[in-house]
Amino acid sequence: MHTSWQVCSLIVQAKPQHISTLSARLSDFAGCEVALSDRESGQMIVVVEAEHHDTLMQTIESVRNVTDVLAVSLVYHQQDEQGEETP
Image 1 (cartoon, rainbow, N blue to C red):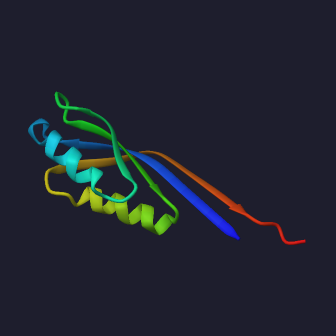
Image 2: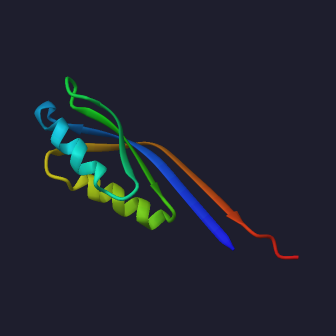
């Protein structure tokens, strides 16, 4: 059996007045967590987890397309694949 795990962190830039609303909206995405937000700068650090690369990329694109998101920067990505060895 082959399992995969993907995680990335994003810096999401928004106008400061939208931070609270955006934080709640982004937390609604599966595998998405707002780890830190700074209302003064309008920045959030968002962690995204998924089993598959395609799912991770779709979530990142969904974050990018949320109204009031100005920019999304990928700052970290890790992939861990494990599988059973066949004798």
